[in-house]
Length: 331
Ligand SMILES: CC(C)(COP(=O)(O)OP(=O)(O)OC[C@H]1O[C@@H](n2cnc3c(N)ncnc32)[C@H](O)[C@@H]1OP(=O)(O)O)[C@@H](O)C(=O)NCCC(=O)NCCSC(=O)CCC(=O)c1ccccc1C(=O)O
Image 1 (tube, rainbow, N blue to C red):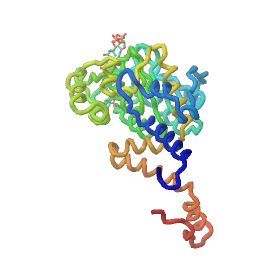
Image 2: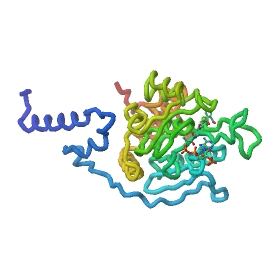
Image 3: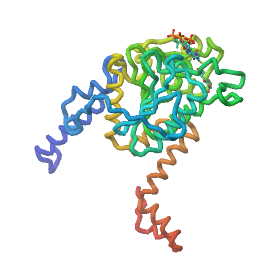
Image 4: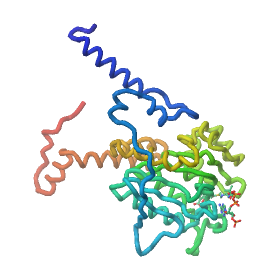
């Protein structure tokens, strides 16, 4: 026994070690997921934090601009969660430029609304999350509807989701294919229903996403699988997608929203700043300078909240020299 240690100290250490090692149990792909792991554990961590409820919230329609209602999406909020739904089920939720513009408005609103901690991104109905770009709007310059010119609009939406400093969860029932597959990949988490189908179709319809559609996929499934997905344009069922690391968990279709909301509640009760920094840090290397800028912005944000940062601002406004002498130079 170490000098000065009582039996009680040893008991405390053992208990804490047990608790910490419990946190280090690796998540397995397939049948065992983080969510069902935690419900089996009986330790201080789980006794303190407990379970979250699974009921579906009373979603309320949300509008960023009442004079300009959404036509292609449904935007709802409840209990700190925003839910953004592509509402074109008759086209398997394919997106046209108008859809992408509305999605960007809703994601922007969810970002700016400080009551919102997490965003669910989904598609209307059970047949599709999203089937990619609506091919009937495709021209030589990209996709065009009310504008006379074409654009590759969805690339801006992908960047917006990556940079949004709150977790975005793709809730996938049915097809997530083509540009719709890329959209779920750029989300932070994917909860799949057991009827979900994943894949790229580009090489069959004369299209390719050579941006995040390639690089994020490579990270998720590895270089060999990513080549398989792009070169062969095959579809994968939910179990296969789970094994490949494309999704976080697979649940029965009828439990999809319940489980997704449960994950949202689990996230929302955690430290928003820790989650914000984790997201920017996890994206930083892959997003290069833009990723570092996002993470660097988080450092500035935290610094502005300190007395040291405030002293600099106050000194400037009071026309005096700043006094930084009381702030430690930490090791
Ligand atoms: C998804 C399917 C496998 C579902 O099959 P099924 O259940 O049998 O339904 P269907 O009868 O096929 O479809 C019902 C209905 O919907 C229409 N539809 C479905 N998907 C699309 C679509 N993507 N575009 C237009 N219309 C669509 C379909 O025609 C039917 O209409 P009816 O009038 O009832 O006949 C299957 O539907 C399917 O394979 N869909 C196509 C999938 C696909 O190839 N998507 C396009 C991939 S390319 C892409 O997404 C481009 C992405 C992109 O936008 C982009 C990429 C890179 C850089 C930039 C960009 C950018 O910004 O644009």
